Image (cartoon, rainbow, N blue to C red; front, top):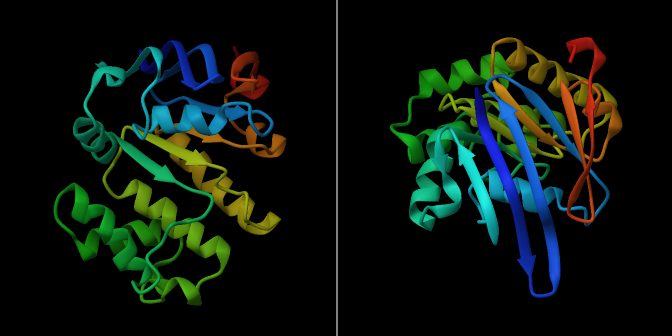
Length: 224
């Protein structure tokens, strides 16, 4: 059963069609990569899926709810309850420790729970770095904190925007291994990337050009 259905979605800014009649479905537990050159519509699609923007036309059904018709306040609630976001730029609070940065996500969802936040950091291999500030962490460690922060509220969907874009090869592999583990546990993943090597580990890759979906590639390791 699809967790996400995008039906004939367009996003128009003045005379620019950032997305042009795009349709896509993502099943529960599936791992999908979205690729395309700069200006292809990847970020626009991520913003719409992540409840940070609304389409000009079409429908977006997330877990049975047509989010294209919801108010901004309701979209904020849906994003908080159903989506774990991972960004290329980390967006950590500089004066908070790693565990406190994870707990911030809990605060907006329910109640901060340090024990649970520490367990999330342990899951990404950073329990011993829990009391460190972002400035005391490497780029790879900061991204792993962001993965822990995205997971802490048990979202229906993990949505990652260029999650390895600022990482060296070793840390990229660590993050991708975490994604593999999440996928094996049944987590639904959508990863926006420009890196073919990152896309290759997903079940399916959707390629955008000039706002349109031009190609879909199924990873042979997962079958069709």
